[in-house]
Amino acid sequence: MSTHEKLAPFSAIPLYSQLKELLRTRILDGSYASHSQMPSENELGKIYNVSRITVRQALNDLQKEGLIFKIHGKGTFVAKPKAFQNVSRLQGLAEAMSQMGYEVINQLQSFKFIPANSIIAERLKIAEGEEIAEIKRVRLINREPVSLEITYVSKNLGKQLEKADLATRDIFIIIENDCGIALGHANLAIDAVLAEADLTKALRVEEGSPIMRIERLTHAADGTPLDFEYLYYRGDAFQYRLRIDRHGANSQGSEPLMLPNEEQ
Image (cartoon, rainbow, N blue to C red; front, side):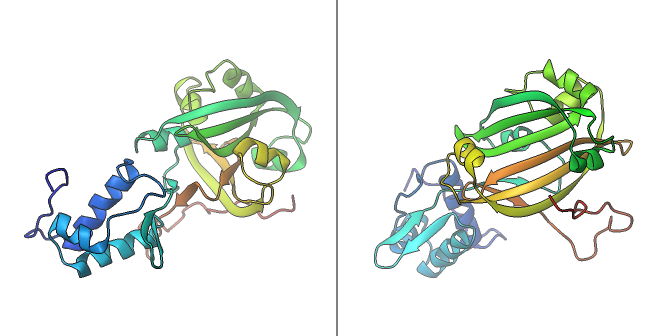
């Protein structure tokens, strides 16, 4: 009992919600390890001095969030929690994940200069065939590969990024702090693909595994297209989250979320 935080029975926050937050914290900090069995409803009720109904409501909410799963006749088990990024803010992966206590490591796969194909040229508003920089990095969260990022920038910007520490820093941070370019907004398109050879090797998944693909076109503060990326995320390890409002204060004149729909 003394090793567990106590709930506040006279708080305006419902007991089930308090319990849910405590259990979520213990799952995310590893106190309840992935695939370990949770205490039973009766045991949790005794530990936190709450009714079984309160426990069940808290567990149901955690199950909806994908943090736990139930096996009939055996009990409740801890799922492997997915890292997530709030897509409503323009941030690099490490910038977002570090704030939540995750360790992010980058593995630079390649850095080379190539001619821009028609799609990249259209996105970056340059001539087809113009030389650009292509950067491939595998991003690891808590030592596990989560995403493969393929970034395309102009030759001039690429020359600056080539000198930077791409193994430990977000490209967004380098662009702003080292290159002195203020970022403005990004357009995103999200779909799903099946893992092929390059992705199976980079992300350590089986061929045909579901992969979330994001196209992100980032603009400078003055509206100039700056950075076009293909971001491939493991479907079992990562989520993108977005809050949307029915009547947003900034709905007038806002930038579209999706990129142009083109054949690739």
